[in-house]
Image (cartoon, rainbow, N blue to C red; front, side):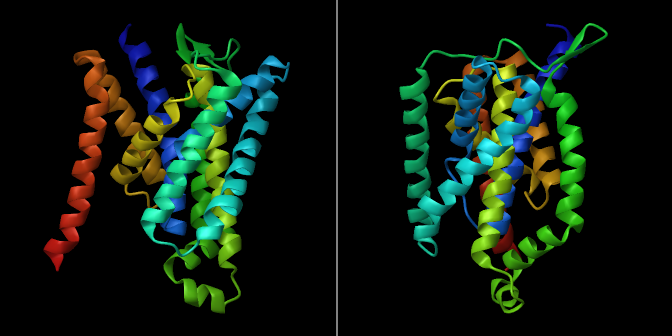
Length: 277
């Protein structure tokens, strides 16, 4: 593999982590919630998009349908799983997310089997003999307006107000339940789109979601998760670092590197407030 091909592969993987990390950032910073099943939502939407593709649905239409599928499944997850335990202890929310993750994995295994699959027809482009994945040309088109919406739109200003001061936001007439539902819709739409694009570049299996989710969460922590751009940059850095390590060391060490990175980042974030105190 030449340098340009290696670089495009690294950037594609980084874009995948980055888009998924944006969803984690939305959920944590706007809802104070860690959705363990977020990566499995990517996996499930990837399979659903592939199923629709085999029924004859074109990639251009799937580009629009996959975010809708992800948003719908995420919205139902909030209504049926997370809303009933609102205000519960974090460990209870975590256990609910783990149960939802097993549900998604079991459904994918039952409906689609364990054999790795991918799209035969993709949205990738070719430029100068270098393959440009859909991740590479689509992500900038999505990231710029999303960053502007997050910073300037009244909708996201209300969501951020609810996250910063829930009591004050409710006094101003902002619905907390509606805010949670909107955040789940946005994060699910990103996971759905990411699942469709992931299936075009890599192989889908029922087990990939959990590992991708943990790596994307590490990317969100790495970037700070305070904005879509910071979360995305964390994912991009992680994808570049992982691909570089894969070219230097056996692949068995890659997952260990991500877990050690996550532990180190969490340890640093915990110790820093203690040192200031």
